[in-house]
Image (cartoon, rainbow, N blue to C red; front, side):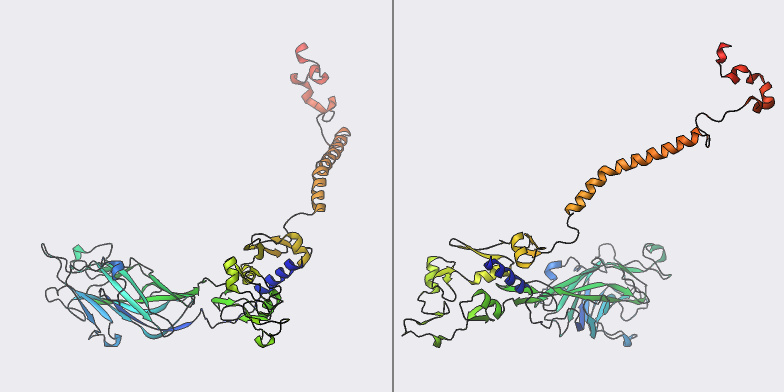
Amino acid sequence: MTLWRDALIFLLALCSVAVVVCDVNLNQVFSISVRGTFRHTSSAEDPFDAKFNCDFCDDGVSQTFVDGFTCPTATSFGADDNEQRWGTQDRGTPYTCFPQSGAGFQGVSGITLQANSGNNTRIGTFSHYNNAIVGARPGNPPSSPTALRLLITMSSPQLSQNFVTAFPLSFVETPNLQFQCDPSIQRTSEPCDDRFSFDAFSPSESFVSDNVRYTLIVTGFISDNSSTPLRQFITREGEVSRASVYAQIVTYCVEPECGANEVFVPAPTCGCECALTNKTCQTVFPDAETAVDDATCSCGCIKDPNSCNATNPDIGAFNVDSCSCGCNLTNSYCKSQNPLWTVKFGGNPCECACNPQKFIECAAINRFYEPTGDKCVCACVATDDLCKETYGKNYRVNKDKCSCFVPGPYTGLTDGQIAGIVVASVLGPLLLLLIMAIIAGVVFYLIWTGVIPGVWGYKIEQGAFGAGGNSSLYQSPWQSNSNVAAG
């Protein structure tokens, strides 16, 4: 039992091993800059072109794309990163900013956004330049697009790569005559309002860096004097309508595949750490002078080769594979006999055996090392008796986790509790019958003595009938209780 007790103690030590905390902050504050464009190209800067396949591009419509334009009448607003323009001015009607209609986006620069804060942060402004343009005519293609696609790129010095997200915008360009306005769209007194619909309302894009997944979630478009994200954006004819674009960054740890003898440590580490300690190595391999090799997360040999003496047959030469003196076996030879074998670490005795590192690998997955014949396997050999002997009488084995635990206070009933339930189930009905019999006896006595009326009633004397006794209904057959039909 000593071997298994030591194994259990080793497992406990492995689970509570101290690790070095890495500097991973899931609530990191990012300094971000955002740019937007309506262009659709096949360049590396537009990785979503193939994804959307220009379904939202309306290439058949005559369109132009303009970078860095500032509206002459709204210079304080600054320049759009990019604008998509379409149509021809309608019969010299007045216009705002430029004669065509169009959409623009202006991203923010140098603002802060904290991950996992739950707060929406403004990352840019979407603008619709709603000018009167010539509508489609028979034989001519539409003068305005029915769909656009906005590509947003967010960069930050704290991010290993940029966020790039794209989503479609459906658009309805309405006529400019009052009787032709769409009542489902019209909100103002000026004919006729147009509408953008944000079909992909919460687009997101993510990537993984250093075991942390970073996700950008665009939460929606919010117009002035509002706090509710919009699914549709109604714009007034002859004006510039703007809506702010809001987003969040969400981060969380992604568990990688850890190596042998390593364990995953969640935030703030978010990574694999070597679970071995020098004490563990010395406990597992008492015959070897060993310590943790951080490079391989294994127990390495620290024996001084000079402590061996090749010319002294009682000591022998140093053998690095066995970490001992005088052993002439090598790992290569042992593996030629069985791929799972190596020289026994510590060299006492000098023999081929299952690779001792397998013991630690088994422990890392909460299993015991159990060499069976020429096989080296990880198995759960813990039992209730072993858990009681190692940790105490209240411990039991959890086969699913191959570990010892103390059952909770409500895992079952004691023998005394079970006996009490049995006795109560028998005596309960008897006690109830006794109580009912006592109540029935009391009631019978009270009726018998006339304290309360019963099925016999009170005796009523003739005189008590008074004048009623003179009625034909109250003749002697009634008073004597004789058979009325017999009279």
